[in-house]
Image (cartoon, rainbow, N blue to C red; front, side, top):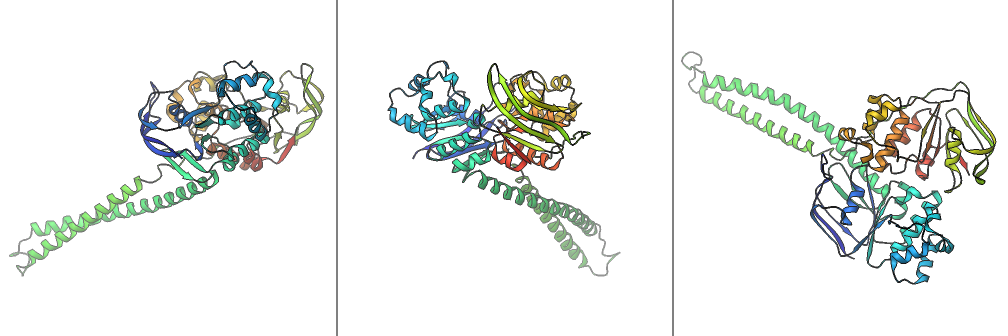
Amino acid sequence: MSLIDVRNLNFAYEGSYDNIFENVSFRIDTDWKLGFTGRNGRGKTTFLRLLMEKYDYQGTISASVKFEFFPYEVEDKYSNTVDIIGGILGDYQSWQLMRELNLLEVSDDVLYRPFATLSNGEQTKVLLAALFMRENSFLLIDEPTNHLDASGREIVSRYLCSKKGFILVSHDRTFLDNCVDHIMSINKANIEIQKGNFSSWWNNKELQDSFETETNVKLKKEIRRLTETAKEKAQWSDLAERRKIGFNPSKVEKSIMRRSSEGAKAKKMMSRAKAIEERQASAVEEKSKLLKNLEDSDDLKLVTLKYHSDRLMELKNVSVFYATEPACSDVSFEVMQCDRIALCGKNGSGKSSILKLICGEPIDYTGGLYIGNQLIISYVSQDTSQLSGSLSDYAYNNGIDESLFKGMLRKLDFSRVQFEKDMSDFSAGQKKKVLIAASLCQRAHLYIWDEPLNFIDVISRMQIEKLLLETKSTILYVEHDSAFCQNIATKTVYL
Protein backbone atom coordinates (compact mmCIF):
# COMPACT_ATOMS: atom_id res chain seq x y z
CA MET A 1 0.00 0.00 0.00
CA SER A 2 1.15 3.54 -0.80
CA LEU A 3 -0.46 6.94 -1.11
CA ILE A 4 -1.07 9.48 -3.85
CA ASP A 5 -0.87 12.79 -2.02
CA VAL A 6 -2.37 15.93 -3.62
CA ARG A 7 -1.63 19.21 -1.86
CA ASN A 8 -2.86 22.73 -2.69
CA LEU A 9 -3.46 21.88 -6.35
CA ASN A 10 -4.26 24.84 -8.59
CA PHE A 11 -4.80 24.60 -12.33
CA ALA A 12 -6.41 26.59 -15.13
CA TYR A 13 -6.09 26.22 -18.88
CA GLU A 14 -4.20 29.00 -20.62
CA GLY A 15 -6.61 31.77 -21.54
CA SER A 16 -9.39 30.22 -19.44
CA TYR A 17 -11.92 32.37 -17.60
CA ASP A 18 -11.71 30.42 -14.35
CA ASN A 19 -9.76 27.77 -12.46
CA ILE A 20 -10.48 24.09 -12.92
CA PHE A 21 -8.92 23.31 -9.51
CA GLU A 22 -8.28 25.76 -6.69
CA ASN A 23 -6.40 24.81 -3.49
CA VAL A 24 -7.43 21.14 -3.76
CA SER A 25 -5.95 18.65 -1.27
CA PHE A 26 -6.69 14.95 -0.67
CA ARG A 27 -5.08 11.51 -0.44
CA ILE A 28 -5.73 8.30 -2.39
CA ASP A 29 -4.71 4.80 -1.34
CA THR A 30 -3.18 2.94 -4.30
CA ASP A 31 -5.01 -0.25 -3.28
CA TRP A 32 -8.39 1.38 -3.82
CA LYS A 33 -10.71 0.68 -6.72
CA LEU A 34 -11.71 4.30 -7.01
CA GLY A 35 -14.71 5.46 -9.05
CA PHE A 36 -14.41 9.07 -10.23
CA THR A 37 -17.61 10.99 -10.91
CA GLY A 38 -18.83 14.56 -11.40
CA ARG A 39 -20.73 16.65 -13.90
CA ASN A 40 -19.34 17.24 -17.38
CA GLY A 41 -16.64 19.90 -17.60
CA ARG A 42 -15.66 19.71 -13.91
CA GLY A 43 -12.16 18.40 -14.71
CA LYS A 44 -12.13 14.60 -14.32
CA THR A 45 -10.06 13.90 -17.44
CA THR A 46 -7.97 17.01 -16.71
CA PHE A 47 -7.05 15.63 -13.29
CA LEU A 48 -5.98 12.31 -14.81
CA ARG A 49 -3.77 14.19 -17.26
CA LEU A 50 -2.25 16.20 -14.41
CA LEU A 51 -1.29 12.91 -12.76
CA MET A 52 0.35 11.96 -16.07
CA GLU A 53 2.26 15.30 -15.99
CA LYS A 54 0.70 16.45 -19.25
CA TYR A 55 0.16 20.01 -17.96
CA ASP A 56 1.97 22.42 -15.67
CA TYR A 57 0.22 23.14 -12.39
CA GLN A 58 0.75 24.77 -9.00
CA GLY A 59 0.89 22.68 -5.83
CA THR A 60 2.25 19.18 -5.34
CA ILE A 61 1.27 15.67 -6.45
CA SER A 62 3.45 12.97 -4.92
CA ALA A 63 3.18 9.23 -5.60
CA SER A 64 5.39 6.14 -5.48
CA VAL A 65 3.57 4.39 -8.33
CA LYS A 66 3.80 4.75 -12.09
CA PHE A 67 0.64 6.00 -13.76
CA GLU A 68 -0.75 4.36 -16.90
CA PHE A 69 -3.50 6.06 -18.88
CA PHE A 70 -6.40 4.35 -20.63
CA PRO A 71 -7.27 4.66 -23.48
CA TYR A 72 -3.69 3.94 -24.50
CA GLU A 73 -2.57 5.70 -27.70
CA VAL A 74 -1.82 3.08 -30.38
CA GLU A 75 0.35 4.72 -33.05
CA ASP A 76 0.23 2.03 -35.74
CA LYS A 77 -3.22 0.45 -35.63
CA TYR A 78 -2.43 -1.75 -38.61
CA SER A 79 0.23 -3.68 -36.72
CA ASN A 80 -0.72 -7.08 -35.35
CA THR A 81 -2.21 -6.88 -31.88
CA VAL A 82 0.50 -9.11 -30.40
CA ASP A 83 3.16 -6.65 -31.58
CA ILE A 84 1.31 -3.73 -30.01
CA ILE A 85 1.12 -5.59 -26.70
CA GLY A 86 4.85 -6.35 -26.96
CA GLY A 87 5.49 -2.63 -27.40
CA ILE A 88 3.50 -1.87 -24.25
CA LEU A 89 4.94 -4.63 -22.04
CA GLY A 90 8.38 -5.44 -23.41
CA ASP A 91 9.23 -8.89 -22.04
CA TYR A 92 6.22 -10.77 -20.70
CA GLN A 93 4.99 -14.30 -20.09
CA SER A 94 2.53 -15.46 -22.75
CA TRP A 95 0.58 -17.51 -20.23
CA GLN A 96 -0.07 -14.39 -18.17
CA LEU A 97 -1.50 -12.58 -21.19
CA MET A 98 -3.67 -15.59 -22.04
CA ARG A 99 -4.98 -15.59 -18.47
CA GLU A 100 -5.95 -11.91 -18.67
CA LEU A 101 -7.62 -12.30 -22.08
CA ASN A 102 -9.51 -15.35 -20.81
CA LEU A 103 -10.84 -13.32 -17.85
CA LEU A 104 -12.05 -10.72 -20.37
CA GLU A 105 -13.54 -13.42 -22.62
CA VAL A 106 -11.36 -12.43 -25.58
CA SER A 107 -10.30 -15.12 -28.03
CA ASP A 108 -6.52 -15.42 -28.47
CA ASP A 109 -6.90 -15.27 -32.26
CA VAL A 110 -7.24 -11.46 -31.96
CA LEU A 111 -3.50 -11.35 -31.20
CA TYR A 112 -2.66 -12.25 -34.78
CA ARG A 113 -5.02 -9.76 -36.41
CA PRO A 114 -4.26 -6.12 -37.17
CA PHE A 115 -5.38 -4.00 -34.21
CA ALA A 116 -7.53 -1.86 -36.49
CA THR A 117 -9.68 -4.88 -37.41
CA LEU A 118 -10.70 -5.49 -33.80
CA SER A 119 -14.05 -4.17 -32.64
CA ASN A 120 -14.02 -1.22 -30.24
CA GLY A 121 -14.93 -3.60 -27.42
CA GLU A 122 -12.08 -5.98 -28.27
CA GLN A 123 -9.61 -3.09 -28.42
CA THR A 124 -10.76 -1.91 -24.98
CA LYS A 125 -10.34 -5.35 -23.45
CA VAL A 126 -6.93 -6.04 -25.02
CA LEU A 127 -5.48 -2.73 -23.87
CA LEU A 128 -6.87 -3.15 -20.34
CA ALA A 129 -5.29 -6.62 -20.14
CA ALA A 130 -1.91 -5.28 -21.27
CA LEU A 131 -1.93 -2.26 -18.96
CA PHE A 132 -2.85 -4.28 -15.89
CA MET A 133 0.18 -6.47 -16.59
CA ARG A 134 2.53 -3.50 -16.17
CA GLU A 135 4.44 -3.83 -12.90
CA ASN A 136 3.99 -1.19 -10.19
CA SER A 137 1.36 0.57 -12.29
CA PHE A 138 -1.69 2.50 -11.16
CA LEU A 139 -4.25 2.70 -13.96
CA LEU A 140 -6.14 5.88 -14.85
CA ILE A 141 -9.13 4.54 -16.80
CA ASP A 142 -11.12 7.21 -18.62
CA GLU A 143 -14.66 6.18 -19.60
CA PRO A 144 -14.03 2.68 -21.00
CA THR A 145 -17.76 1.88 -21.24
CA ASN A 146 -18.34 4.18 -24.23
CA HIS A 147 -17.08 1.42 -26.54
CA LEU A 148 -18.68 -1.52 -24.72
CA ASP A 149 -22.09 -3.08 -25.25
CA ALA A 150 -24.13 -4.28 -22.25
CA SER A 151 -22.49 -7.70 -22.26
CA GLY A 152 -19.02 -6.19 -22.56
CA ARG A 153 -19.69 -3.83 -19.66
CA GLU A 154 -20.65 -6.73 -17.43
CA ILE A 155 -17.47 -8.66 -18.39
CA VAL A 156 -15.16 -5.68 -17.86
CA SER A 157 -16.81 -4.76 -14.54
CA ARG A 158 -16.15 -8.31 -13.26
CA TYR A 159 -12.56 -8.02 -14.48
CA LEU A 160 -11.99 -4.69 -12.72
CA CYS A 161 -13.60 -6.04 -9.55
CA SER A 162 -10.81 -8.65 -9.40
CA LYS A 163 -8.12 -5.93 -9.66
CA LYS A 164 -6.93 -3.15 -7.39
CA GLY A 165 -5.09 0.08 -7.91
CA PHE A 166 -7.02 2.23 -10.38
CA ILE A 167 -9.10 5.37 -10.86
CA LEU A 168 -12.13 4.75 -13.06
CA VAL A 169 -14.01 7.61 -14.69
CA SER A 170 -17.48 6.39 -15.62
CA HIS A 171 -21.07 7.62 -15.59
CA ASP A 172 -22.64 4.16 -15.76
CA ARG A 173 -24.20 3.62 -12.33
CA THR A 174 -24.45 -0.16 -12.60
CA PHE A 175 -20.89 -0.44 -13.88
CA LEU A 176 -19.52 1.61 -10.97
CA ASP A 177 -21.56 -0.32 -8.43
CA ASN A 178 -20.08 -3.61 -9.66
CA CYS A 179 -16.38 -2.76 -9.55
CA VAL A 180 -15.40 0.09 -7.18
CA ASP A 181 -14.97 0.32 -3.42
CA HIS A 182 -14.49 4.10 -3.11
CA ILE A 183 -16.01 7.11 -4.89
CA MET A 184 -14.25 10.41 -5.56
CA SER A 185 -16.61 13.16 -6.67
CA ILE A 186 -15.84 16.59 -8.09
CA ASN A 187 -18.50 18.81 -6.57
CA LYS A 188 -19.23 22.47 -7.10
CA ALA A 189 -17.11 23.60 -4.16
CA ASN A 190 -14.74 20.74 -3.40
CA ILE A 191 -13.51 17.22 -4.10
CA GLU A 192 -14.61 14.55 -1.64
CA ILE A 193 -13.86 10.85 -1.23
CA GLN A 194 -16.17 8.29 0.36
CA LYS A 195 -15.90 4.57 0.97
CA GLY A 196 -18.45 2.47 -0.91
CA ASN A 197 -19.88 2.22 -4.42
CA PHE A 198 -21.87 4.71 -6.46
CA SER A 199 -25.26 3.84 -4.93
CA SER A 200 -24.05 4.34 -1.36
CA TRP A 201 -22.38 7.64 -2.35
CA TRP A 202 -25.54 8.85 -4.09
CA ASN A 203 -27.69 7.89 -1.10
CA ASN A 204 -25.37 9.83 1.22
CA LYS A 205 -25.43 12.80 -1.14
CA GLU A 206 -29.24 12.85 -1.24
CA LEU A 207 -29.38 12.70 2.58
CA GLN A 208 -26.84 15.51 2.89
CA ASP A 209 -28.62 17.64 0.27
CA SER A 210 -31.96 17.07 2.02
CA PHE A 211 -30.51 17.98 5.42
CA GLU A 212 -28.85 21.14 4.08
CA THR A 213 -32.00 22.20 2.23
CA GLU A 214 -34.19 21.77 5.34
CA THR A 215 -31.61 23.55 7.51
CA ASN A 216 -31.41 26.35 4.95
CA VAL A 217 -35.20 26.86 5.05
CA LYS A 218 -35.18 26.97 8.88
CA LEU A 219 -32.29 29.44 8.94
CA LYS A 220 -33.99 31.72 6.39
CA LYS A 221 -37.09 31.82 8.63
CA GLU A 222 -34.91 32.45 11.68
CA ILE A 223 -33.05 35.27 9.92
CA ARG A 224 -36.35 36.94 8.93
CA ARG A 225 -37.65 36.65 12.52
CA LEU A 226 -34.41 38.01 13.98
CA THR A 227 -34.37 40.87 11.47
CA GLU A 228 -37.88 41.95 12.51
CA THR A 229 -37.03 41.56 16.22
CA ALA A 230 -33.79 43.50 15.78
CA LYS A 231 -35.67 46.41 14.23
CA GLU A 232 -38.16 46.37 17.10
CA LYS A 233 -35.47 46.21 19.78
CA ALA A 234 -33.50 48.97 18.06
CA GLN A 235 -36.59 51.20 18.13
CA TRP A 236 -37.17 50.47 21.83
CA SER A 237 -33.51 51.10 22.60
CA ASP A 238 -33.58 54.41 20.76
CA LEU A 239 -36.73 55.48 22.60
CA ALA A 240 -35.24 54.54 25.99
CA GLU A 241 -32.05 56.44 25.15
CA ARG A 242 -34.01 59.58 24.24
CA ARG A 243 -35.94 59.41 27.53
CA LYS A 244 -32.69 59.09 29.43
CA ILE A 245 -30.92 61.97 27.72
CA GLY A 246 -33.88 64.36 27.46
CA PHE A 247 -35.22 63.77 30.98
CA ASN A 248 -35.89 66.86 33.27
CA PRO A 249 -36.77 65.64 36.79
CA SER A 250 -37.92 69.09 38.02
CA LYS A 251 -40.61 69.24 35.29
CA VAL A 252 -41.56 65.63 34.60
CA GLU A 253 -40.89 63.35 37.54
CA LYS A 254 -41.48 63.65 41.23
CA SER A 255 -38.59 61.25 41.98
CA ILE A 256 -35.03 62.32 41.19
CA MET A 257 -34.10 58.60 41.12
CA ARG A 258 -36.04 58.06 37.87
CA ARG A 259 -33.02 59.14 35.72
CA SER A 260 -30.94 56.12 36.79
CA SER A 261 -33.91 53.81 36.12
CA GLU A 262 -34.25 55.12 32.57
CA GLY A 263 -30.50 54.71 32.05
CA ALA A 264 -30.64 51.06 33.14
CA LYS A 265 -33.58 50.41 30.82
CA ALA A 266 -31.76 51.97 27.86
CA LYS A 267 -28.65 49.90 28.56
CA LYS A 268 -30.74 46.71 28.75
CA MET A 269 -32.50 47.46 25.45
CA MET A 270 -29.20 48.16 23.71
CA SER A 271 -27.72 44.92 25.06
CA ARG A 272 -30.68 42.91 23.79
CA ALA A 273 -30.49 44.55 20.36
CA LYS A 274 -26.79 43.78 20.11
CA ALA A 275 -27.35 40.12 21.13
CA ILE A 276 -30.01 39.71 18.45
CA GLU A 277 -27.70 41.21 15.82
CA GLU A 278 -24.99 38.72 16.81
CA ARG A 279 -27.42 35.79 16.57
CA GLN A 280 -28.55 37.09 13.19
CA ALA A 281 -24.96 37.31 11.92
CA SER A 282 -24.27 33.78 13.20
CA ALA A 283 -27.36 32.41 11.39
CA VAL A 284 -26.33 34.16 8.16
CA GLU A 285 -22.82 32.69 8.43
CA GLU A 286 -24.20 29.19 9.06
CA LYS A 287 -26.55 29.54 6.11
CA SER A 288 -23.67 30.57 3.83
CA LYS A 289 -21.95 27.24 4.52
CA LEU A 290 -24.90 25.26 3.15
CA LEU A 291 -25.94 24.29 -0.38
CA LYS A 292 -22.50 24.90 -1.92
CA ASN A 293 -22.49 21.38 -3.39
CA LEU A 294 -26.21 21.14 -4.12
CA GLU A 295 -26.41 20.32 -7.82
CA ASP A 296 -28.85 22.35 -9.90
CA SER A 297 -30.92 19.84 -11.82
CA ASP A 298 -34.04 21.67 -12.92
CA ASP A 299 -36.64 19.64 -14.75
CA LEU A 300 -36.16 19.46 -18.51
CA LYS A 301 -39.08 20.20 -20.84
CA LEU A 302 -40.20 18.42 -23.98
CA VAL A 303 -43.23 19.34 -26.09
CA THR A 304 -44.02 16.54 -28.55
CA LEU A 305 -46.32 16.38 -31.54
CA LYS A 306 -49.23 13.96 -31.49
CA TYR A 307 -49.41 11.78 -34.59
CA HIS A 308 -52.74 11.18 -36.32
CA SER A 309 -52.37 7.38 -36.07
CA ASP A 310 -51.47 5.03 -33.22
CA ARG A 311 -48.88 3.31 -35.40
CA LEU A 312 -45.91 5.47 -36.40
CA MET A 313 -43.71 2.94 -38.20
CA GLU A 314 -43.07 -0.78 -38.66
CA LEU A 315 -40.30 -3.10 -39.83
CA LYS A 316 -41.10 -6.57 -41.20
CA ASN A 317 -38.24 -9.03 -41.73
CA VAL A 318 -35.80 -6.23 -42.54
CA SER A 319 -32.18 -7.14 -43.35
CA VAL A 320 -29.58 -4.38 -43.73
CA PHE A 321 -26.47 -4.75 -45.89
CA TYR A 322 -23.15 -2.97 -46.26
CA ALA A 323 -21.80 -3.96 -49.66
CA THR A 324 -22.73 -7.63 -49.66
CA GLU A 325 -22.26 -8.16 -45.92
CA PRO A 326 -25.40 -8.27 -43.75
CA ALA A 327 -25.36 -5.95 -40.75
CA CYS A 328 -28.54 -7.55 -39.37
CA SER A 329 -31.21 -9.95 -40.59
CA ASP A 330 -34.98 -10.42 -40.25
CA VAL A 331 -35.66 -7.55 -37.87
CA SER A 332 -39.34 -7.01 -37.10
CA PHE A 333 -41.01 -4.58 -34.71
CA GLU A 334 -43.46 -1.68 -34.73
CA VAL A 335 -43.45 1.67 -32.99
CA MET A 336 -46.75 2.80 -31.51
CA GLN A 337 -47.70 6.12 -29.99
CA CYS A 338 -45.97 6.68 -26.57
CA ASP A 339 -43.67 3.66 -26.93
CA ARG A 340 -40.20 3.92 -25.42
CA ILE A 341 -38.30 1.19 -27.24
CA ALA A 342 -34.76 0.11 -26.40
CA LEU A 343 -32.95 -1.45 -29.36
CA CYS A 344 -30.42 -3.84 -27.82
CA GLY A 345 -27.69 -6.13 -29.06
CA LYS A 346 -23.95 -6.62 -29.16
CA ASN A 347 -21.62 -4.21 -30.94
CA GLY A 348 -21.84 -4.80 -34.68
CA SER A 349 -25.34 -6.29 -34.57
CA GLY A 350 -26.76 -3.52 -36.76
CA LYS A 351 -28.54 -1.29 -34.23
CA SER A 352 -27.21 2.01 -35.61
CA SER A 353 -27.86 0.79 -39.16
CA ILE A 354 -31.53 0.25 -38.35
CA LEU A 355 -31.82 3.75 -36.88
CA LYS A 356 -30.13 5.34 -39.89
CA LEU A 357 -32.39 3.40 -42.26
CA ILE A 358 -35.50 4.70 -40.45
CA CYS A 359 -34.11 8.25 -40.61
CA GLY A 360 -33.86 7.98 -44.39
CA GLU A 361 -30.17 7.38 -45.02
CA PRO A 362 -29.44 5.49 -48.29
CA ILE A 363 -28.78 2.01 -46.87
CA ASP A 364 -29.31 -1.23 -48.78
CA TYR A 365 -31.97 -3.43 -47.22
CA THR A 366 -34.56 -6.06 -47.92
CA GLY A 367 -37.92 -6.64 -46.25
CA GLY A 368 -40.76 -4.26 -45.45
CA LEU A 369 -40.33 -0.77 -44.00
CA TYR A 370 -43.41 1.33 -43.25
CA ILE A 371 -42.97 4.92 -42.04
CA GLY A 372 -46.06 7.02 -41.37
CA ASN A 373 -46.91 9.79 -43.80
CA GLN A 374 -45.47 13.17 -42.77
CA LEU A 375 -43.88 11.63 -39.67
CA ILE A 376 -41.48 14.14 -38.08
CA ILE A 377 -38.37 12.55 -36.56
CA SER A 378 -35.76 14.13 -34.28
CA TYR A 379 -32.44 12.26 -34.48
CA VAL A 380 -29.43 12.27 -32.13
CA SER A 381 -26.32 10.71 -33.67
CA GLN A 382 -23.43 9.02 -31.88
CA ASP A 383 -21.03 11.31 -33.72
CA THR A 384 -20.22 14.76 -32.29
CA SER A 385 -17.14 15.46 -34.43
CA GLN A 386 -19.04 17.92 -36.63
CA LEU A 387 -19.68 20.34 -33.76
CA SER A 388 -17.73 23.57 -34.06
CA GLY A 389 -18.48 27.27 -34.01
CA SER A 390 -20.81 29.12 -31.64
CA LEU A 391 -23.97 27.83 -30.00
CA SER A 392 -25.86 30.78 -31.47
CA ASP A 393 -24.85 29.81 -35.01
CA TYR A 394 -25.71 26.18 -34.33
CA ALA A 395 -29.20 27.13 -33.16
CA TYR A 396 -29.76 29.39 -36.19
CA ASN A 397 -28.50 26.81 -38.71
CA ASN A 398 -30.75 24.12 -37.24
CA GLY A 399 -33.87 26.26 -36.94
CA ILE A 400 -33.92 26.10 -33.13
CA ASP A 401 -35.09 28.86 -30.81
CA GLU A 402 -31.82 30.15 -29.34
CA SER A 403 -33.18 31.19 -25.94
CA LEU A 404 -34.96 27.84 -25.50
CA PHE A 405 -31.83 25.98 -26.61
CA LYS A 406 -29.53 27.80 -24.20
CA GLY A 407 -32.09 27.49 -21.42
CA MET A 408 -32.07 23.73 -21.94
CA LEU A 409 -28.26 23.69 -21.79
CA ARG A 410 -28.35 25.72 -18.56
CA LYS A 411 -30.53 23.01 -17.03
CA LEU A 412 -27.91 20.47 -18.17
CA ASP A 413 -25.26 22.34 -16.14
CA PHE A 414 -23.80 24.63 -18.81
CA SER A 415 -22.43 27.82 -17.29
CA ARG A 416 -22.96 31.12 -19.09
CA VAL A 417 -19.22 31.20 -19.74
CA GLN A 418 -19.63 28.11 -21.95
CA PHE A 419 -22.00 30.02 -24.23
CA GLU A 420 -19.10 32.21 -25.36
CA LYS A 421 -16.80 29.30 -26.27
CA ASP A 422 -16.35 27.48 -29.55
CA MET A 423 -18.07 24.08 -29.46
CA SER A 424 -14.85 22.40 -30.60
CA ASP A 425 -13.42 23.28 -27.15
CA PHE A 426 -16.24 21.53 -25.30
CA SER A 427 -15.68 18.25 -23.47
CA ALA A 428 -17.10 15.08 -25.07
CA GLY A 429 -20.00 15.13 -22.60
CA GLN A 430 -20.78 18.78 -23.27
CA LYS A 431 -20.87 18.11 -27.03
CA LYS A 432 -23.35 15.28 -26.50
CA LYS A 433 -25.50 17.60 -24.39
CA VAL A 434 -25.62 20.03 -27.32
CA LEU A 435 -27.17 17.31 -29.51
CA ILE A 436 -29.64 16.23 -26.82
CA ALA A 437 -30.69 19.81 -26.01
CA ALA A 438 -31.22 20.49 -29.71
CA SER A 439 -33.42 17.39 -30.00
CA LEU A 440 -35.45 18.40 -26.93
CA CYS A 441 -36.08 21.78 -28.55
CA GLN A 442 -37.56 20.14 -31.64
CA ARG A 443 -41.25 19.28 -31.74
CA ALA A 444 -41.42 15.82 -33.29
CA HIS A 445 -43.61 12.73 -33.42
CA LEU A 446 -40.71 10.30 -32.92
CA TYR A 447 -37.34 10.78 -31.20
CA ILE A 448 -34.53 8.49 -32.37
CA TRP A 449 -31.41 8.59 -30.21
CA ASP A 450 -28.27 6.57 -30.95
CA GLU A 451 -26.28 6.05 -27.72
CA PRO A 452 -27.27 9.47 -26.36
CA LEU A 453 -25.65 9.00 -22.95
CA ASN A 454 -22.05 8.46 -24.06
CA PHE A 455 -19.89 10.78 -21.91
CA ILE A 456 -23.01 12.28 -20.23
CA ASP A 457 -22.72 12.71 -16.44
CA VAL A 458 -24.93 10.77 -14.03
CA ILE A 459 -27.07 13.68 -12.83
CA SER A 460 -27.91 14.66 -16.40
CA ARG A 461 -28.81 11.03 -17.15
CA MET A 462 -31.25 11.10 -14.26
CA GLN A 463 -32.74 14.38 -15.53
CA ILE A 464 -33.30 12.81 -18.96
CA GLU A 465 -34.81 9.69 -17.39
CA LYS A 466 -37.26 11.78 -15.38
CA LEU A 467 -38.24 13.78 -18.46
CA LEU A 468 -38.96 10.70 -20.58
CA LEU A 469 -40.95 9.04 -17.80
CA GLU A 470 -43.10 12.11 -17.21
CA THR A 471 -43.85 12.99 -20.84
CA LYS A 472 -45.81 11.03 -23.43
CA SER A 473 -42.94 11.10 -25.89
CA THR A 474 -42.33 8.30 -28.37
CA ILE A 475 -38.69 7.29 -28.51
CA LEU A 476 -36.61 4.58 -30.17
CA TYR A 477 -33.10 4.45 -28.81
CA VAL A 478 -29.87 2.49 -28.57
CA GLU A 479 -28.18 2.68 -25.17
CA HIS A 480 -25.93 0.33 -23.18
CA ASP A 481 -26.54 1.93 -19.76
CA SER A 482 -28.51 -0.92 -18.17
CA ALA A 483 -30.02 1.25 -15.41
CA PHE A 484 -31.31 3.76 -17.98
CA CYS A 485 -32.82 1.01 -20.14
CA GLN A 486 -34.48 -0.73 -17.21
CA ASN A 487 -35.96 2.52 -15.94
CA ILE A 488 -37.18 3.87 -19.27
CA ALA A 489 -38.04 1.14 -21.78
CA THR A 490 -41.64 0.03 -22.25
CA LYS A 491 -40.46 -2.44 -24.91
CA THR A 492 -37.10 -4.02 -25.73
CA VAL A 493 -36.08 -5.28 -29.18
CA TYR A 494 -33.05 -7.62 -29.28
CA LEU A 495 -30.94 -7.96 -32.42
